[in-house]
Image 1: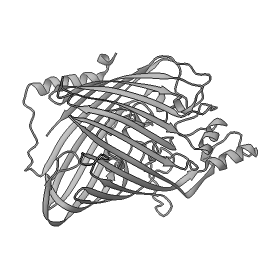
Image 2: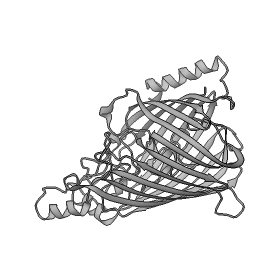
Image 3: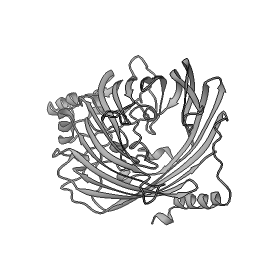
Image 4: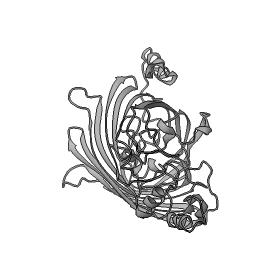
Length: 444
């Protein structure tokens, strides 16, 4: 069925076209960057057991869905160490069950509002300048988010504009890229990091990063959406904004090994609802059903912390993990409905039988705080979850993938995800979700 999908055919035709001429290699002395990508994901699952289903449930009947994302990346060095980045993007298709019913949804590329259509939009528009301290410099890898090839070892970078916070925070070399690695939301990101973003995953803000030998510190102030998972930004900044800070130490947990340790903290301020207020209003008979949207308050805060670890084992093998926690008293607002997150995995880049390939396996355990559980159990709806009832159990996911490089920027992947207690509900599942992915990178 994937072969019949028009966006899959686009990837194949583009690969054939690329094969007729050599692919240009980015010249590190140039002060600009142009590239593009196409990512197509097709997923399906068989029927699975469910004692009941609600408005926001993963459908228990067999279903399939396909998504596609096309991105055009551009950047230019304006003067000195000042760069401008502009990315245009188009998304289309959808996810199984319209991306409802799972906290760890199975496809990171899916935009959860199908009414937005596939018209191109500005994904990123950043102006960044870097100030150096001292004379030492280091080589950096040029790419869509970095035009310059050399930067001071000790430096302060300031960026302003439209961005995705997870391009800079909670990044993990082995588990952050749905184009070549894992697909699940709570494997590619910390599920308890309710980072400021609109429906498409972007925000507007200011980012400040200080890099030194072996460590870095970054801070960002960003705009929140007006409603949970909304596309519009809330410009009442005194009551709606997001504070983010992360400390990174570039060393492994094991002495004298490569790796990274990142500690994250965030505080969101927005017009958010209280699970307890919604429950109490329902029990008092004020509301016929628990409705958190009726109990929002401007300036309400939600805080959380996270840890992100990478540990190299050599030979292209890397272990990784994340853990996150938020109190779960205030509604999940921007990313997903997870209050406690734990993730462990291992990835292998360049296995001996095929050096261009990569593979990985990861386990994700997603949990809810008590107020959040009770709200869903009494029939409340979140922006993702709502089975009409809840027999709580942590949502547990095992995902494995294999990405095969076909050359000329083309890769294909197979992926499988086994999910116990979908939507944190022991009365539903388990379910196995299978996927095929086709990806094309076009360098400048």
